[in-house]
Image (cartoon, rainbow, N blue to C red; front, top):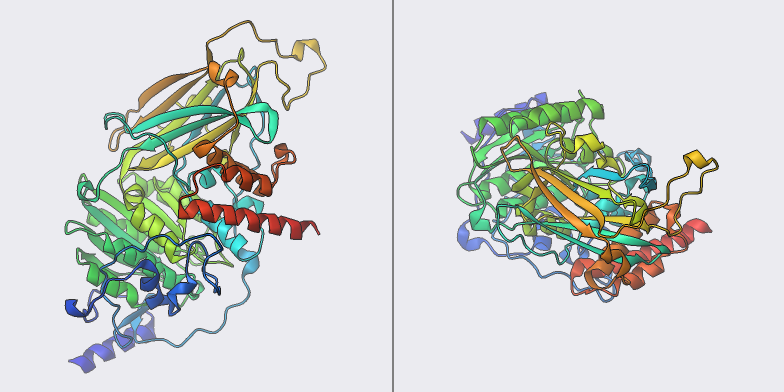
Length: 580
C-alpha cells in the first residue's frame, strides 16, 4: 500500500497536476512530545534559523539582539504541534510529492516592486470646499513595509508611504464605547502644530468595541497560499507558514480552516477542518515552485469559502503572497473587479503581503480595500504575532461596515485645512449619504485616527491672495460657537441602510489649543514621520530628529513605540545619505 501511495504521489508531481482536494495529513506528533513555544521558535522551525535573529520588525540577520533600549515583547504561549518530519509528503508549487531540490537562483528583482502612491493632499479653502469626506482605513501594511526598507538601510519609495496606515498601526488611549448599540466611540482634540505656528491640528479618533475570544462567532477561514517560485526565500513562504500557524493556534472547536494553494495552477490541499494540528501539518508540507496563477487561486478560495459558509459567522479568505501574479489574470483592475463581485457573497478578504524584490503592494492594498477586508505586511515573526494573534479579533470580526467620516468646517472659525493622509480613501461629498458607495470596515477593537491641519480664521495660511476682488474669499463674520461639524455613517454587518452619528466641535478648542503631549504627541509624531517620508513640502524645517523628540513626550512603555523611535534614527541616517 505504501508503495502504491508513493508511486501515485510521484506521478502527480511529475505531471504537475493538482489534486483537489488532498487532505491526507502527515503523522501527528504525540501530545506528550509537544512543547510550548513562542512565535519566534515556531518560525524557526520553518526558517531554520536561530530565533534570536528575529525580533521586532526585521527579517534581516543581525548580531547583538534588538536595538539598544528596545526590549522584545513578551513571548506568546503556543500549543502548536511540532511540524512533521521531512519524510512526510509535501505540496510543492501546487503539486504533491517528496522534498524537492533547491530551485536555481532567481534573477535580481529589486526593481520590480510596485506601488500605487498618491500625491500629498492639497490644501483646501473653507470658503471654496468646506466639506471633507473620506472612508476609514484600518490597514497597517505601509508601516511594516517602510520599516523593512529602513531596517535594510534604504529609504522607502515615497509611493510606498501612506500616513494613515502609519497612524493606525499604533493604539491610542481612546475610550471604549459605552455600549454596542453604537459600535465605536468618537474622540476629538485640538493642539498647536509643531512644524507651523500658524496652524492647529484637529485629531479625530474612533475605537471599536472589543470582543473576547470566547464571544467571537465561528469562523470559516480559507488560507490562500502562494507557492509559486517567487515565494522561495525565507522572508516569503517560510514566514507565511509560521504566520498562518499562529492563526491556527487561535482556532476554537467551532472554527473550520481550509487551505488553497496556487502556482502554475490552483488546488485545495486541505478540506475544512477544526483540528489545528492538521492545519499546521498541511502548512509544513508546502514548498515553492512554478509560475503564479493568482487569480485562479483566488477564485477557488472564494468558491471554497462559499461552499462552507457559516450563517452569522466569520467567512473570510486570508491570502498570503508577494502579489506577483503572472499567469492568467494579472492586471490589477481585472483582479479587483473579481474581488468586488465576490464580496457580495458575504466573504471578506484579508491580504497579507510578504517578501522583497518583486513585491506588488499596489495589488495587495487595493484588493483588500475592495474585498471588504484589511491589508498587513508581515516582515517578521513578531509582526505575524501582532497581526494574527494579538489582533486576531480585529482582523477577522467586523463590527461596522462602510464607515465614512465627513467634516464640515465653519468659515467663521477655519480658513483653510488639509487632511493628512487618506488620499486614496477620499470620497465625493455626495458619496457620504449614498449607501451604495463602498467604504472601509472596522473590526472589533480596531482604532482609526485622522489628523486635519487647519488655519484659524484670520491666520496666515498656505494659499495666496487672489488678484481680482470678485475672486477673493469674503472675510469671516463675527460668529462664535462651532469650529466644525463631524458626521459619521456606518452600517451594521448584514444591513444595507447606514446609520448616522453627528457631533459638533467647539470653536473654543482652537483658542485653548496647547502643544501636543502624551498620546496626542505620539500620534502627531507618527503623522510627521509619514509626511517627511512622503516628501511633504508643507513640513517646513521639521526633521526626523524633531519627530523623535516629539514622540519621546509620550508614554513609550510599549515595544512598538520604542521601536518607532529607533526607526526615526534610521530615517534620519537614510536621509543624510541620500542628500550627499
